[in-house]
Length: 272
Image 1 (tube, one colour):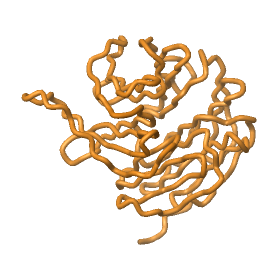
Image 2 (cartoon, helix red, strand yellow; image 1 turned 180 degrees about the horizontal axis):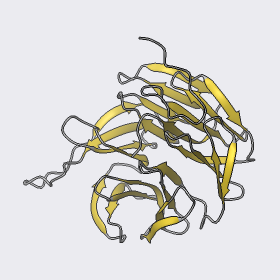
Image 3 (spheres, helix red, strand yellow; image 1 turned 180 degrees about the vertical axis):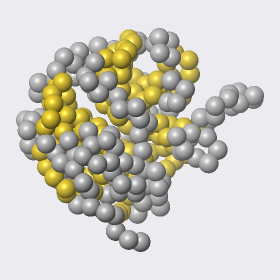
Image 4 (cartoon, one colour; image 1 turned 60 degrees about the vertical axis):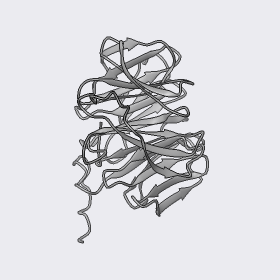
């Protein structure tokens, strides 16, 4: 097909032209690549860049791991704002479709949503150490808690309402609006087993009480730190060796060696 039109600074990412944001904590640099792994720009304005997320309206957030603040970058990779006042150092930070972000703070036992202005919309405390959190379309908050081998759904008041029991600790929990033809659902990484899964979650509970069955998407990601499932069925993940992009058949599309990622975020493909 025809190549995508070049991006205009400040313009939304064109359909099918998703990008990936990489925080290299070891080198102290943030890099944005196109969907083919080609570097578009880099930013070295924080000593220890950590978690990151981005929206299709040109905003990117990067956690300054050293000073525990959010640095906002524009579509060209320039710093435009700094948001201080985080209650602690988050273990996860994910963009939401309305322009806000959801974060999990394991040391505080807190999950919350922060507005684009840096103001907190809501927070709640939960028993345990939340290391990852996503929000689904029904306002359920799916949380991975520290060493727990399960993902628990909470309501906005912090009350547990559902859980998925797993064979190992989950990480990189992601809500997929179209994970499978029949239902939306969750995707997650089991780094101790080197496996990536998706599981469909029916809107209504099954009458026979049967638990939803996870689908193994890909094996071979042992000790992966971050993962993102792409809308075309592909998979992007980062480990201590580098970053890999696989197609839906598990074939390598591109890789970047040597990037010790403090975080990865995909922009223009899908947000929770």
